Image (cartoon, rainbow, N blue to C red; front, side):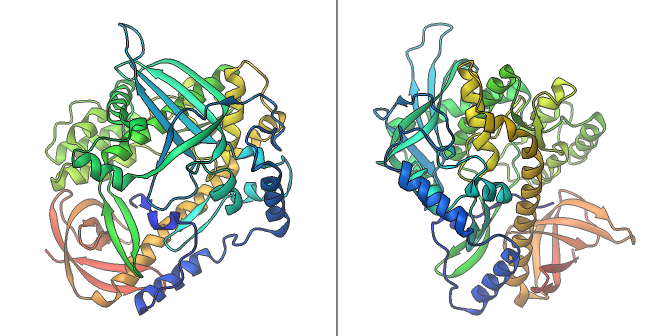
Length: 506
């Protein structure tokens, strides 16, 4: 099983030139090989289309865009929004402003304003840029480059919610009770102006040191906790598998496990909140597209709970409570094995058109515990560009743009195929990076924890091992109990194919 891949260095605006040194050169060569079949430069007609749109609209965020939507924008520039992203990011989709209210009993305690970049105003439906974004579907990230959904003149310039710039946006305003439930919701087209570009690591470090958060996000820990409590009440769950990073520093690449950060987790809850609101609005209108994932069946739940019990934990509670009780920060190797087993509960994620489902369960995103839509990353994901105007029109009880409704039918397949490509690239990046970085360490023994096991068709027993240093998750030939420490020896590494072979030694 592959851990989630995060590539923060790839969010910087320019490609890195190959760094000196044989390992860096081999890694760049491998990444170039992986990217060879991906679209590189934007076609001339699509790029010209983007540049013309920016020249036409970039200086006036109130102007009617190429998407033809004429609804008047609300001027929200007096609200001091801020953005928070990985360090160096320039394609800024979201900005927030949070408030704690003087709530009377039964009224709202928090107000969340969440601005999402309006990239659609730069795109003519059916035009060259529109066609190219449908071919790409989403931005694909590699450690030393990215294949963007939109040309940089839009995604890192005219549409990005950069600080001290007036920008067109869709703005969610959601008021929450103390327990995280929604009291009221609204979605408008607006013009906003971010006051600051923040990054997760700096804000988290300051928060951990006792420094106050910036005023615009001072309520984030409390709001995040309230939303997490509501998520638990809905039957949702946040999986706690360690994120595997490929990072570059001064030309040296390393593999690390990225620690969980409370600020980032709380911010994710704000994004999930916007996705739930968008889903609710589209469901009321009777059209749109949802990000869905079915609940696990009883057999899958029973198999997971059997693993939990076998590892010595109480398996008598619902699976969501079991995962939550073990905790994200647990260092017990058996707890780690439980978290690696948990993705078996959540399979079959996809996109579902509203009106084509056969039951309410088919509208659910099981990990969220509610209907949900991808809506907060339109600079990097095609489907969000459709969700936003459909949901905003639904909020006004108005007709959605014809181009958005007409384009719905093809979106699930476009997102499925481009998501498959992105997932395969993520997987291969990890495999090639592991093989290249470990190529000179053949014969070494590494300590790890067994987090899974299987038997191949030819009867070979394999165990999946989480190795803390270097940060790899690999399969090794041999037997060992799941949840137990183990030593494995690197038998061979093949950088040309991204293949590692390990054997259990103790």
